[in-house]
Length: 189
Image (cartoon, rainbow, N blue to C red; front, top):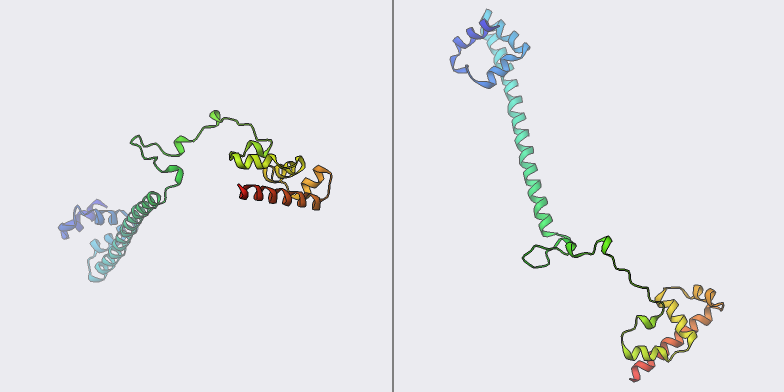
């Protein structure tokens, strides 16, 4: 096969060293076309060889085009994703504003550092306003208990009624009366 290639390169010296031509000639089906042309050169065989090379070369160029397109599309996609991430950072990922680059997420307490607070057992533990606390203590024990269960434990009137062994209507009436008394005491003061 070397003889055939040498004859071919003698006739076309400018193609020697061309990587596309050399890769084309390595394929067995193209070697056969080249051998036919070199053994008995005529225009028809030359056209067959030329046509086969054009098809092969188009495939190379098309593959190269696809590779470059995919590469640039992936680069552009990465740029868009980075830009999107910069513009839409999560609140926890944003910087606190100091020069150390600390984020809100860095300031969160880890699981090992969780401080357990005692859950309030009554609304009196949650009320910080002195006037409201005074008004709360002016309610009856039953009214305070209803408000505690309704607003601290978020129970419905029917659940409160079951726990207090009374009717749902009585609980509703007691809650409304307690809220009305609180409103009137706070609005007077």
